[in-house]
Length: 231
Ligand SMILES: Nc1ncnc2c1ncn2[C@@H]1O[C@H](COP(=O)(O)OP(=O)(O)OP(=O)(O)O)[C@@H](O)[C@H]1O
Image (cartoon, rainbow, N blue to C red):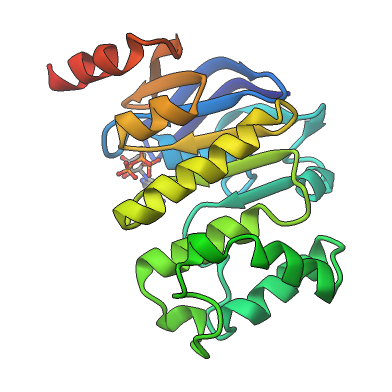
């Protein structure tokens, strides 16, 4: 369970985020949508203790994320390429993250082997540093690294952006597999309303830092969101 309690973030006088309360139960697939600058990345960064909120706190499985590091043991995330280590190859990076996650070399190789289709022969065995991969292939590496070591919480910021259509479809399958477990809590932000409504059972809409909708996904949700964003 993730609890977001009276979180606000101000830069100077500008308040870019103001969320009274959001509770995300264990196992929920939670989608965050909103126009550019709505505060999605800011909220994820606060949940990951990458930026300190002006007010409020976030707890993840009863751990206040700004007070302890222990939530990192069960949390996998990919916000952007700053999460990668540019001078490593993808294989080296996966071994590095696997080591942090308590996986041995064979376990990492077996895990990565399960993503052969997802990588589409563009990430593994390329003898390229991560910094030299295309944006989309960097994203693939970052997403897969976020899933290593059986995380209980997975946070992905705009995972569909920059991915080719084939990989977007494969990513949806990967995410659905995660969310089917009902033990892994998955938080995703996206500008793609179709994808996010397909993979998330709950959608929260942010507008200028405020929660303006909190929907349980149904057959009508996509239409409702399209209508909201078309006005
Ligand atoms: N370091 C900073 N200093 C000042 N303003 C910032 C800073 N970081 C973010 N902001 C502002 O906070 C607001 C929310 O940004 P954020 O990146 O969270 O939005 P977003 O919903 O993720 O947008 P996008 O869809 O464009 O990625 C924006 O107005 C942004 O300019």
